[in-house]
Image (tube, rainbow, N blue to C red; front, side):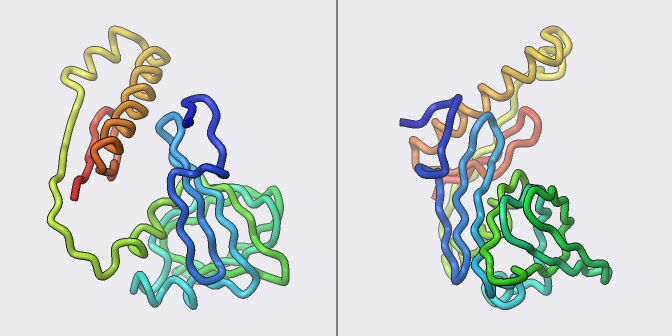
Amino acid sequence: MKSRYVRSFASADEVMELELLRSSVITIGGLTVSYDIHQPGWRWSTHVKPIVRTESCQSRHLGMLIRGTIHAVFDDGTEAHAGPLDLIDWPAGHDAWVVGDEPVEMIGWTGGKTWLAPVTTLGDRVLATLLFSDIVDSTGMALTMGDQAWSDVLAQHQLRTREIVQRYRGRVVDFAGDGVLAMFD
């Protein structure tokens, strides 16, 4: 059973697998977090570029490496090298690859859902219903309640919204403040 307080990647909301890559994704408290394992030999331009068909990875990655070493070259020519316990904040527009013979394990707070999303939808064409919602007078409510109370309300709103959307076989595309974009196919 899912808990709003504790989640495990052993029972992730979604698992995506590609050659030399496994990504498990969980949403908790309105935050989507990924646990990614890149095997030795993995490289974005070799294993993902042919699928998503962009010149470089177009997702920002914010996260922490648990083990292994990864290297990136950004579109502007700068490079970055990261290893265990390093935090990364890599903007969209890069190539990255595993360095050495050890898998790279990483927890990602940003990018986990976006960079692999095209993989699951390529070649599919669906008729979809889009749902947009917004909390009426959210600015007034936030001012009345205060920052902490409003933050708690938003977190609960996002949690319940995800539960309801998933119950009806939809998916939340994005949260923007108090706004929600969901899709049902």
